[in-house]
Length: 266
Length: 232
Image (cartoon, rainbow over all chains, first blue to last red; front, top):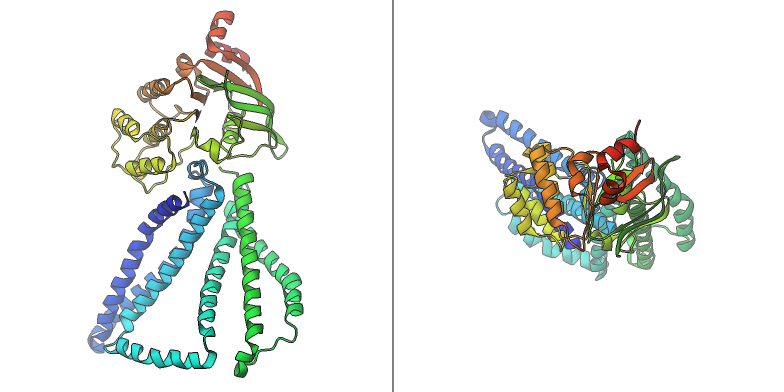
């Protein structure tokens, strides 16, 4: 059932992102040409197409944020909720499907943005140079940190995904809390967002920081001798990930509780 | 006698206000039941509780002996009083959606009803009138071979001709195993298809009776009895 939810969630959102991605890539190509024309003659069109390109780029990231909020609120907590929440599916699967698809679009938008920059900036021979240089680059990094490079790369990816997930889930939890109010729901959601953020910060300061200080006494960063500190760094990274994961789990649990026990559809 | 829907001491409060208070009710299989009451009497609250869109404050509501959840949603077909259709799908896509999520959904039946009501499956939901959307919703709900149909104000927004067709559809879906619960205050329109009525007022059951008994013993139509009971 989760896969079916994911299927419909992607169907519902791709019709928004498809055209935006296409427009961004087309204007990246246009920019590539207008920037290469002789400056005197084409300056106006170059400026104009660059303005359009940047507007689309900004619009794309704003839309990513709007769609994340709107899909959760509109599809689950407004009139459409009558359909979605009476399907024979556990409510946590609804949250997971929305979360995964939102993460997918954030990542896809970032990749399309990078691709569009490459389209504009890439010159002849750049790719060959990149391939030529990347070999020695990785050798150097490898010489410096050794095989830990793999672990660190994996940790970077997991940490990145955890941060996005936690960021999305706090928004979902805020919207869910906001919907408990009968009036001024948007305002209440903002209030809930500020409140949840504050509570999380307080929790970090009074629980996690002192706990961290006891676990890692005398922690000081020494970039020259990175390897000697490896175990401590690993411990600290793991600790940060656990904190982020715990907070994300708490936002998830709150959202799920409201969706199952405190539903207040209009 | 087999009970499909059962409420024991069911109470739902919103703040201090009780929408339902200590309600007791048992509905058997194989009936078309009218849930009748004035505005604000608790009809919608009761139906929402049966669909897990609300959680009881006290007491419980059971469908085939189970509390509302994934298992009961598989056998309950629910028509809310408002339109819940999104604006980006076509009719045929929402039919796919239903047959994807409900095992008991009968696609042929849905397309047949669409033909009868002259609705084009390629039309977008966005472009439809409110009445047409309501028809589509009713078709979706009645195309399931469910055991309990909970219809909240199913005929409020549609024209009389479609109303007749809809009532005929509900009647033809009637079988030994399935119960249809229709909440409405348009009693005279649906009176002829009802087997059983439940009168509800201020969150409490006022009267439950078979329609035959009302006619025989009291010599009245349901509509006349309703006006008498809920006289302002």
